[in-house]
Length: 374
Image (cartoon, rainbow, N blue to C red):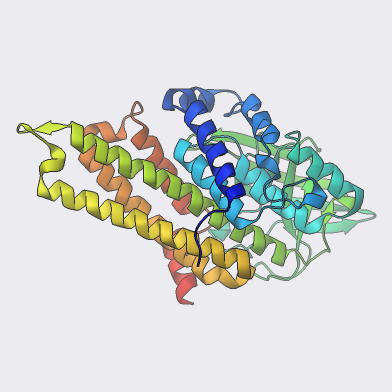
């Protein structure tokens, strides 16, 4: 496989890298995370102006015709700065659903607003009893005249508190664990019966609990055919796993480099810590774990770009490795930094918290190991 970026992909990477380096020093990020929305609206508009919101959409939809490789490039650089803007929930998840389901004028309208930075989305799919089984859905939708009535509860909905529209999964037929009978709906969070409780997550992002009680939506708010949403849910979950692995990769690189720099500067017994053989061994182990992750993320990206869901086994291998390596690199980095490693003032602790959250999103390391083996 050829892992070299094209000229256009390299320009995209350089553009995102410069933005992150300029706009995301730790103190600036902490202030944004504590703000009302949890991110900077002007930076979201900058994403739109720079064309980053258009990356995964076709030129016919107003995008730049990018694919998994371009998404990986963006997310890896976002991972280096712990970017707070809701790119994953809005562009990767929400946008991934819309571009696979919408047709006609509404497709142009909603994708146009998203690409221009005027539409925030949240994918309300996860439920408390489901853990990471995407097909485990008890929320229900029943047909009522020319519309639908939805009931259910969705948990840990990223960007749920800021979203202009929710994309809600509900069962229109079948049993709790069936892949058949799942449907997706567009829901305005201001609709009667929708209750959204937002909260900050441990890694500085925002999520929400979403409760729907007798929520009525129009027939036009059904995305795709009733009961046939499973392939779409599966596809956007694959997109999300790859995006999260790329984001984690960027963060792991920072953690390794920060630890190497610290051990070269920190003096013990009249010598830099990096002079001691035991410390050198740990640094080499961290570097090897990172390099393995990098190789597998690149391989998974290329396979997914070529074969779509047929690459699911490689995606699971990648998510498993990212999860285990993230814990090892994070714990080792914290240990070598001593007590400083978990302070709010040092960015290492923030990167480690994000790694731990990524490990739990869309299936943890053990879950994906089981999927890989199966």
